[in-house]
Length: 281
Length: 303
Ligand SMILES: Nc1ncnc2c1ncn2[C@@H]1O[C@H](COP(=O)(O)OP(=O)(O)OP(=O)(O)O)[C@@H](O)[C@H]1O
Ligand SMILES: [Mg+2]
Image (cartoon, rainbow over all chains, first blue to last red; front, side, top):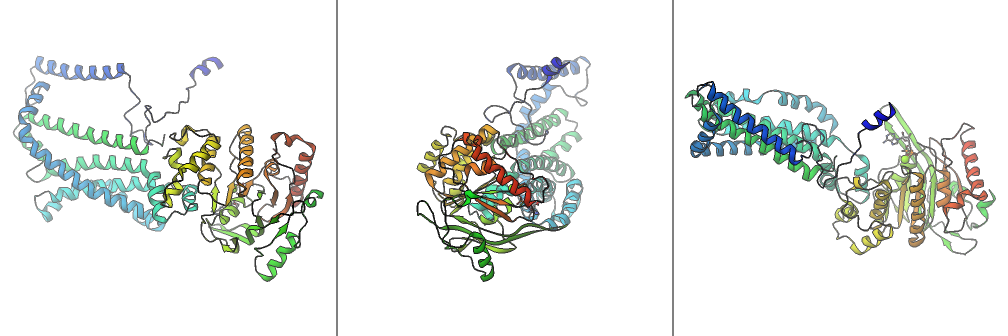
């Protein structure tokens, strides 16, 4: 028994930053372990099988295009329709970027300030939670009444959706005070501001990045949703437009763009996490 | 007790009487000068702690951590502060570093009251306390960064070489062993060239071999630099091995129970810890601590 157990005890390998993949605190925040060439090959193979298989099946069973277009039709639509989609993509990106920048900055600053005052934090937290859990999309019709059909109501909705996410995760990070590290900085004469920039922020960084990632994904959802609800531009609006015309290849081409957008955001923050927060194994 | 008086005869009254007088007149005798009986060298007081009392306010009431602690740290000496867990050693050291304020009493560096961290005083913490997001050299340069001064590269590389860390500059703390981390933190503190080093159980978390190694290293560093060192430990043997004087603290509320002079010549080797004279000193201090606690077993290791 000892022997078999001994064989099973996993080796504790401390992964290093060099090429080991250091996952951040949450399991959600990982691209998985480092892949071998073989594993990468299998992943690509699976993609080929799914795409090729659905192409064949849809063709074989004669599924009409308005139910499910073939991958080749989607690809063609993506290429031919792209010049028409491009301005909408830019609008979506602009709304997402501005809304997220506003929401994230406010959320970050609020977290930094509020965690310094336990009483304020206790009072404010339930309301932040309310903001996190309420779908901000629900406010869009109201915002449209007030701000019209331009980008403003959507930008506001994105800020409202991403801000609380950034805030609540950053606050968790800032709450992880290590008195000894703060004392260390103070013993070398650090000012309160230096303690904030050199100790508190780096210590909170892994959670701040998690917040930014989750917040930006929520922001993307809200941008698309808000564009579907009202207005005449953006990829969300194009989705409703093409589905109303039953132009499914174009519809799915947009879905494809959105998927790539989402993955890019994820990969970007993953990379940021490796760069700035890989010390937390 | 004989050993306490073999080397030094005091020009001033004994510590205890001096403390009493200080208490009556409410003034610290900071220029309390003594003459070494053997060399005739003057022993100046570097830091003077006078009637230091610290009460922590907690939800469940006050915690009396320090009670009227009076203690002089002499210039250039290696002072060990020995006491059971929770007796207030860290509290005392943090107050000396200006990291928190006393409830009453005062602490001076020369004539200067210590109210906040002082550039002449550097602290070495219980674990190495390196910042995990900075590599070794960035950790060592932190004090310069905070003071907005260019780092003293020449001194730093000399110190790194001295403690055997050359070539590890770009390693992250988690890639270093506990002993290496603590050596890095010693370099970090020495790089700002302080005159007083406060060390809070720096080797408490290390294994016995590494600990011996570190004790030898710190002895050598002290002999080379002659900085004033106040070193907190709860190991009697470590205290005797390192110290010129051992100040024994009693359990909560922390008081100075006794001060022992350790006149073992230097450099001391690890082997002296097995000599009868050394063991006698250990037992002497151990029995003093046990008496101080009314016979109940002390939580002090005799390692
Ligand atoms: N911030 C604090 N708030 C409340 N009580 C505290 C605080 N810091 C320390 N204490 C209490 O004061 C007493 C002395 O603590 P201190 O850390 O100075 O002891 P110590 O001698 O360094 O102990 P150890 O050997 O375990 O490091 C302990 O009873 C501790 O619980
Ligand atoms: Mg302590």
